Image (cartoon, rainbow, N blue to C red):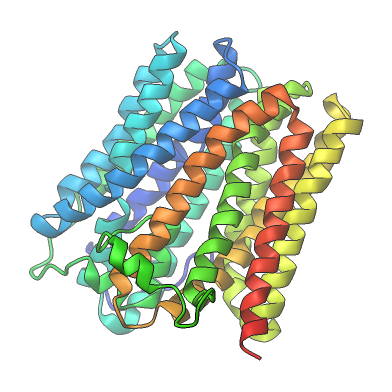
Length: 425
């Protein structure tokens, strides 16, 4: 089997720009873990880490709206790609010379502001430079390059932090940003530019767009539209509204866990090298499973896949909570690797695929921009609240409580989603 999907329908150097995502993700992939560990190294607590994550997700909501409007207004794709890629290098450079926690948090927010500009131009470039019948292979290749890059970045960070301080690791990642920009210079501006709306008309394009950055605002939903999602019968919610509620519970629980997990691993005595190793295991498994999740969903069925993936993620979070109660230090390393690979890797990849399928089917062709805008708002708010709550929950009650609470929220999302299939009987 080929490592990268064969890319037909594009000749010469027109597809070279895709390879810019490999070095870019090597640099960008480890940043969220780096910022959490760096804040802790500066003397911060899990609360400071939660502020950083809350700022990142809080900024991403308006940034997604503004960059989307800018992409539609200006036809050129290169500036948005350059700005987004370069911001990673500049933030890494600034962080390496920072000794102030508040400034580190602000820089992380700045990174969120500019990296939100990347996902939409990349999706449009695939559609504008490749024949329509070859879009699937184009998006597959771009996704695979991004996944390989992120895996290499986390693996490299894991190895390097074994004998180098985080500041030096940050500086060593910057050359990959430069390489990415140089490769991105091969982008040829398309003769005909598509609008963002073109993305939501093709499921492959939309899946990739949401995978790169899971907030997309074609139209910002208004109050009247939100009210209209309530079912025609009194006190009965529409199917799409139930999906929104389920997604909110899922991403709220995920945000609490993801925010507290890295500080929690440090709290039980694991060094940076082991923390990166655990995160790498989850990311690598997730990247691999994404290639087969679609076929698995088709063979096992939507309901079965949704149920098993959510149950696995929820049970894994609860299990990690109990591991933090009974095990500390190196003794918990192996168990954390296994459980994180299952929850963040296998379970998330399966859930992401099946939940997006369910979302796309339910959104339909009527006002899809507003519906996806509301979905993005729900996800963004859940991330923001979850990351903010996580710090206080872990600091004042305990990491194990935060992880168990995360698992219970995922279980809640499972029951909410299963309610959809009960209504269909």
